[in-house]
Length: 322
Image (cartoon, rainbow, N blue to C red; front, side, top):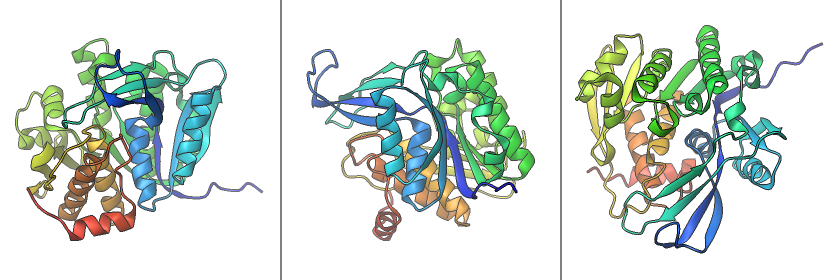
């Protein structure tokens, strides 16, 4: 008698990298001391959702090396199901170096991910029975940029979840350096976005992808293609929501000091997806998304500022609009 997989709230997939973070300011060439963390937009969201109490399953590949084991251990410590993370002996784990900025500016980042284990993921890494066990699938535009087989995996996962009737979120998370050219990136990302229920671009990303210069225009572009809800990230100013029946802006959250901007969009996605799965109203979803994005930029590290449910409730109670 076959046993069905236990149900989970969210499936996410992609590449988690080891990250060497500079301990002092200065160029990466001049810094001598680093400490080890993990990084990756897709797994940042998985971590954020798990910290809020959702049951999250993570799908990826790592190399048969110490960095790969470090990543698996770090994700498991967050309460994420890592049983579908494969250890691939043929290829290494990707990693990156990140500079330190104490002035709130964007840090310098150097990637060493070409040919990594995660870039060789394929559709069979995410079997249909796992997809069928979940309420929601979260995708970004980063995995399909890593290689043809990961692009196929993304298309397969989204098509399967759509056929199963679950919900799908898509954050474009544009990485132009991983694509051969802008036109190829635009076509590929939009084709995926059209298969999602909730699309979450930043304003600049939306302009690149649609040619529209306003949040309303960007949202209309995706709604016309069958997307149900479009949320445009406007940075510190807040976010714009648009569906077939309503459209509005929710102001951002006041931040006295920005420490690290990396991961703000992942915090935003964490807030929106979790609130949406909690059954909150669209306005409440944006308020939570803005709040977690604001928390993310006040802590050094890509995902260190993502809150627990208690920390989130405390922050929302002390909410200060821009």
